[in-house]
Every structure is written in structure tokens, then in C-alpha cells.
Length: 494
Ligand code: FRU
Image 1 (cartoon, rainbow, N blue to C red):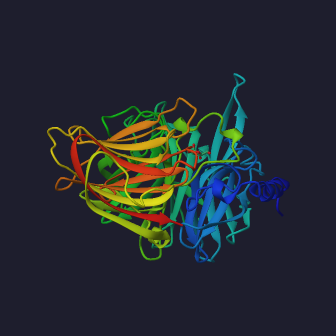
Image 2 (cartoon, rainbow, N blue to C red):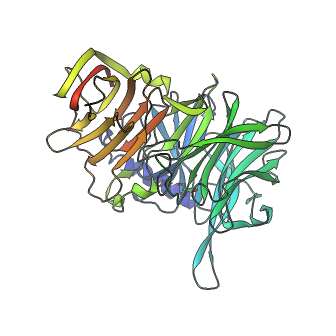
Image 3 (cartoon, protein in one colour):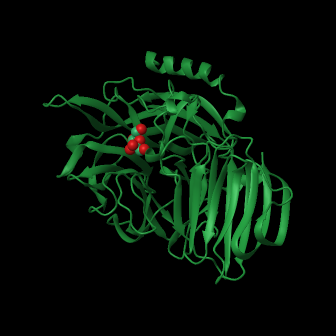
């Protein structure tokens, strides 16, 4: 039986969606059907389609009682909304259905594993969230919560684990038919661990081991873990809260972390070899991956960050977007990202400018737009006198967003101060970049309200959202001190 809460949410979203015009949304990034969206959940392939569920509060564009929104796609770029999949309608999740993942059962049904939240009143009168792992089983549209819920509770936690921060299960089936899941868990007061659990059938779970230990290094609680093999290595992705900055690598607050290492499949032991941030821009968090049928590891993140969500989002019709799906690889020991290749099917009206000399400011014929893809190769002429190269986009007399490269610092900065924000949140961020043979390559993708930059074939990415009026669609290039040579290829995306 479908609960009243789920029916109400479904009826609400069907109506509210009508109030949002197509051009008020991104064109090829997923946004919530209505209201609020955060983390990607249950990103998977099922029944011949890609499925994306998401943290969802349909009733207002602010975080609230968490549902799982649902959309499907054939190409990861055009999405069709399906009815809300999960509502907080059961005793084990009455205060929210938090993040989780999806897998296919041997009998063909889809299994969702998520965190059920229940508020508990403490002896001092305050309330705290009890977080437990729960299951739902479905056919790709309708999901029924498992009668044995919750399947992982505080009783399954090892010594020293906190029962209030225990969330975001990522589930997978192993080649031998058994199941594993990993869950983020606060450990002691200020650190966290990724815990691994095992199951024979996907329904009955027990504690296995600690997969990775933060050891107070990267923020406090590690949220939304994912773990997979990639190019002969193993990768653990997670999104730490409360980070302290480390050089240009990690910034304060909510961040992203990629640990690359080896994994002994016999003993299930992960040995870390290196760490890096996943995205160096402003808005990227809680990423999740899937494996496509042709063997590509594809990652999507929430194209937002808790620290930069403005407090007045509720005035909007919708808030929150997913990033572009990105193909992952490891090159020279680093995680690299490329825009999903399906994006090329949206390209129209190619414009090319080869070897243009820039001193001062130039605009190039045919190079403008807010749904656009631009590949720019840049060579600085005289590094001694050269100060700064800037590409400006979403530009008119009032607005602009900048990417600026300072060769003497070896940094690239994204600056969206003039992008329509009326809040005093972070609007700039920098990363180190490493030109190859003197050439810096910037691959920029714009989709109305966002910019994603892939630097040097995805060695770094910088992502941010924009609030700029859509009439600001100029793109320009400028040099401060000296001269640069640029080659630009640009497409409209539609
Ligand atoms: C990450 C997160 C998750 C949690 C969800 C709640 O952004 O805090 O840890 O499950 O959001 O909406």
C-alpha cells in the first residue's frame, strides 16, 4: 500500500512542477522536480535506464524532511522525472530518508539501501538523530520498504563508534554473489571511519571491518563514501565535513576527498597511497559513481556545497543541481575527470579561432552563450612580464564570472562575485595548475546556471553555480601585462 505521505508528495510535485518554466532550469543538468535537492542517491543502471534518486524536499526550496526524488535517463543528460520514490513514512525513518545507493537483486528487482533517521529526545531535553540503515525493494518506479528494517543499527557498530553519525550506505554485489556495503561513521569525537558490512543475500547484514580511518586528518565526519576499482588501483571517495585547509589542496568547511590505493581482495584490506581533492571549485559535494555497461566509471556530484547554500533559498521555485556526469580515470597517480562523452551529441554550430594573439581585451566572433562548451588552449608569450590571463563569461555591463590564470603563481582562480549572488558566501577559489609544454588547456561547460571547468584534460576541475541573469551571455579574453596566444573551439549545447 502506498502511504498517505508518499501520495501527498507525489500529488504536490506534479502540480508544482508545472509552475517552473523550462528555461528557468538548467538544460542538461538534473535539477529537482520542484523544491529542494541535495545529494545524488542510488545512482545506478536498472531496466535499461540510468536511475538517479536524490535527497529531496518537494514542499519548499530548503532542506526539510528528506524524501528520495527520482529521475531516469538514457544518456545521463536528458532526464525524465518519476514519482517520488521514498517518503519518511515509517517508524524507522520517520524523520527522514537520508542518502544511500542502489543495486540489482538476482531476481531482477532493484534494491535501495538508505539511512533512516529517527529523532530521539536526550536526557537534557535536546534531540539527536539516530541513524540506521534501511532497505526498500522495487521495480524501477514503486518501492516497498523491507519488513526487516532497520537492517543495520547501533548494535552492529564496533567499539568507539557514534550511533548518531552513521549514514550514507554504498552497496555492491561481489563477483562471488555476496554483498558488501560501506557506511560513514563518526569515530570518537572529532574523527570518522568508513565501516564495511557483509551480507549473503543483501538483506541480512553483519559487521566486517574498518575499510578506512580518517585519523583526524581530513575534516571530522566523512559523508557519502564510494569505493571502486579504477585503472588497476582502488579509489575511496568521500565528502568530509569541517575540514581545515591544507595549502591549495583542501579548503575550509565541507570538502571532497579521493584516496587512491591498493586493495587486497582476499583480506579486503585497503592500503592508502595518495590523497587529493576531487573538485577545486566552489560547488561540488557528495559525489557518487556507477559503472556503465561499456565499462566507464562515471561520477556525479551535488553541484552545491552546504557552506555556500544561501539561507534564503526557500524563496526560489527550485534549488540544487547535479553536476555533469564525469568519466573517471587515473593518470600519473591522480584522479582525472572528463565530461561524459555523450555531451558531444549536444554540440551545435562549431566555431574555431586558431592562434589568436591577445593583448588587452578581445571578443571573438561567434563566441558567447550560456549553454556552451569551450575548449581553450593558452600559451603565454613572455612569462617575465606577463601578469594574468582572464576568460570572462556570463558577462554584460553588470555581471561577469572570471577564470584567471597567473603563470608566475601557477594558479587558476574562479571568481563569481559578479554572478548575481546577494549573499556574503565564498565566491572565489584557487587551484594550482600545471601547463604541459607551456600550454594550459581549459575546457569550460556552461549550462545557464553553472560553470564546470576541466583543466588540462581533467587533471583538476573547478565547479560553481551562477545566479546571473540569463541575458548576460558575453565571453571575452584579456591579458594583463604581455601577450598570450590562444586557440578556441566553441559549440552551442542544445
Ligand atoms: C550529505 C548529507 C548526508 C545525508 C544527507 C541528508 O550532504 O549530509 O550525509 O545523508 O546529506 O540530506
